[in-house]
Every structure is written in structure tokens, then in C-alpha cells.
Length: 54
Image 1: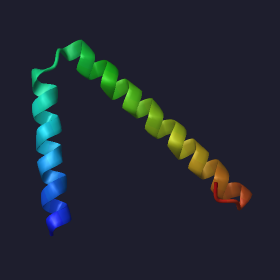
Image 2 (image 1 turned 120 degrees about the horizontal axis):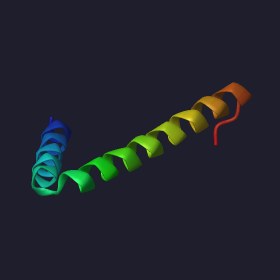
Image 3 (image 1 turned 135 degrees about the vertical axis):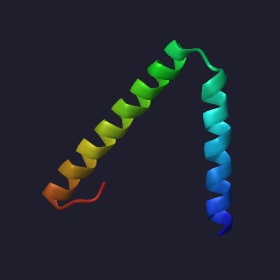
């Protein structure tokens, strides 16, 4: 339960920060995070197909 409260607190803090940031900065940050997650997903999928965990 404490983990959930901490996660919601951090989410609220980040959303509040994004609300005060310029739109262009928010879009660039979202794109960077999206590319990072896509690369991570591809690497995980590739690693699982080979049978190795890296």
C-alpha cells in the first residue's frame, strides 16, 4: 500500500511538472521516453527468442 501511495505521489509530481513545462519540451521528452521504451522492448524480445537473459 505504501508503494502505491509513493507511486501516485511521484505521478502527481511529474504531471504537475509537465503542466508547467513548455509544450515543445514535453513533446520532446515524451518522444525520447517512447524511443527508449521501444528499444528496451525490442532488446527484451530479441533476448527471449535467443533463450538468453542479458
